[in-house]
Length: 138
Image 1 (cartoon, rainbow, N blue to C red):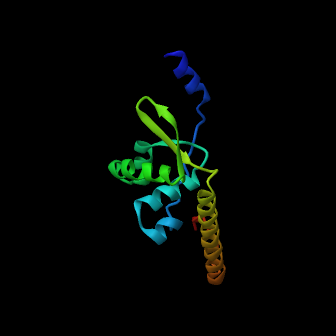
Image 2 (image 1 turned 180 degrees about the vertical axis):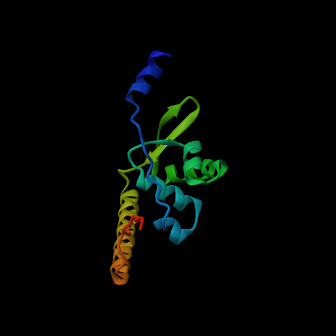
Image 3 (image 1 turned 90 degrees about the vertical axis):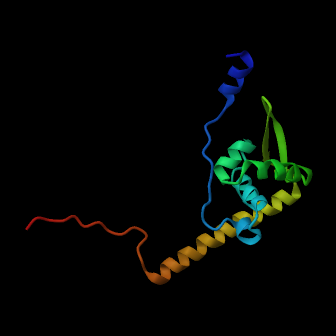
């Protein structure tokens, strides 16, 4: 292991992607691969991802990602953070006013969905967790 690799390895933080499998806010409106990628990056703004990683997580084909990521970079919604070998790394551009607006929309839409689910739950008077009654021998 080279010195550079050991530096990168020691600085890597364990990450756990947020995968919102409900109604993805942007994708539910626009129904495109771009909106799915933006939903993912907006919900995971602290880490950078390679196109193959995003493809695996979002289920967007790699060739599609390789086509749309340069477009998102040109629009300043996403930025390249560097390279690992020949692989480019991407992250949400949290300094972009457009990205901030999209992030606000996505988080608001998720909160509205949560509130609606709670209201529906309260209307039905169903407990969130059903009670478990142990079977007793007679």
